[in-house]
Length: 192
Image 1 (cartoon, rainbow, N blue to C red):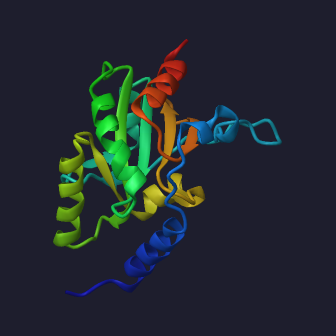
Image 2 (cartoon, helix red, strand yellow):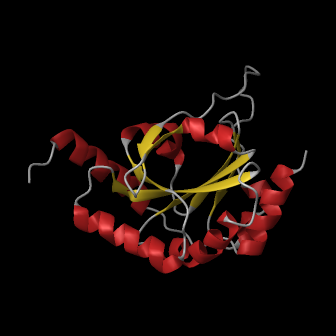
């Protein structure tokens, strides 16, 4: 099997950056004051640009940032196959994925350590983890477009972004939380 050097190098750099921080912080350490709203206006008063990307899903489909228009709120949960806090919260996230009307809320996983060009064994391992945890929602595979759009500032997994219909990041949470804490955050963000 021949591996493209630039793709391999990008995968190594991304994994190295993300390996520096699998956190297991709980809800108490994720108070709203500890989160960063990435869509806040910059010093010039201009709002941040919307998130745009194209990616492939774990099951082989293609998606783009146009998926944000499908729901009022999209939860993007960045996780890694080696991260126990990530895997421990995924059963609750799987339950959340079906708890809301699709026009109100959708949940998408981003597998930070599995790239689009990963070999079949790695893809199968990620699929097995998704099945074992009951995280039956779409999971995106890492590529340069997705990395550039969202993951350049991610220093730990899990990291979760909440994005509105226009692709604006409303909130960012670093660390794992229980289902009830996620529900509280989702409900607050869905309020008019």
